[in-house]
Amino acid sequence: MSLRIIFMGTPEFSVPTLAALAAAGHEIVAVYTQPPRPGGRRGLDLQKSPVHQAAELLGVPVLTPVNFKDEADRRTFRAFDADVAVVVAYGLLLPEVILTGTRLGCYNGHASLLPRWRGAAPIQRAIMAGDHETGMMVMKMDKGLDTGPVALTKAVQIGETMTAGELHDRLMQVGANLMKEAIGKLEADDLPLTEQAEAGVVYAAKISKAETRIDFARTGREVHDHIRGLSPFPGAWFELDIAGKPERVKVLNSERVTGDGAAGTVLDDNLTIACGEGAVRPTRLQRAGGKALAVADFLRGTPIAAGTRVG
Image (tube, rainbow, N blue to C red):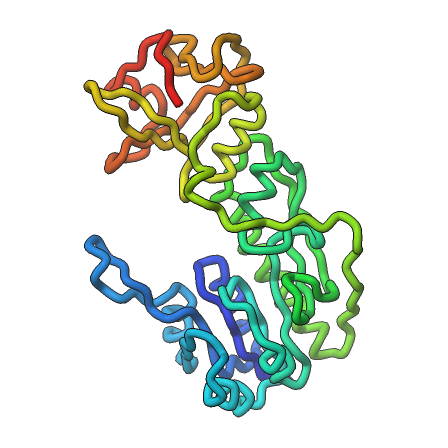
């Protein structure tokens, strides 16, 4: 026996969960994803989401409503007569009529240890805050923002140099296995639900462009966590005077090192940069329009002398 599942997701992060549920023998009756967006080198081509592409390979019907305000979209959802909806990074806040539109409700794969980091950017925020642990949770969705009761949890350690991209890839696989286990337990009527704690709620706001600039007045640890929390996208950056004009330079990896000086000052020929306390050394950088380079390669093409101020 298998469950009839509506899958709802959009980015690459969601794809392994869709694949795992299909491989487990469940019937994916429909996939909902965000509509195609402009993309390509000139931004003129409409590009289907990674989930859209994966669903087509599986031969599953794909629907891309802008929202669920239209009664016709709501009727279509209910008409699939699904047992359960599985939601992983879909990108829409679902109305109650959708949350209750399947026999067993909607289950969400969320990339944090709830109630810490509810919201849009839990992976980046956990690293930027210097957390040593995060994880995946499967919860039954309700009308709130990531407030529903939790079914299963899998903790993941955050290494000292782990970037958001690396953590994303780890949680992506953990989440797929956890959701497969949860849906198996749900099918067997053996999936426990535990209400979230009322204490410890923290919200993971969407990353804004205004906070991507590196503030070297912060401590070396905070700057390092900021850099890796925004790597590889959107990327933390500093401004550097190159050939007489300011240019943004992204820092994709860094390490905490010893050093003392005015915040934002380059302390040596290896690009150690003083912070408000301690120092950091970028280890992989990228000029606008250029390739990501190891620091030694970057400095061969763009020498930065000790005493230079960056920020």
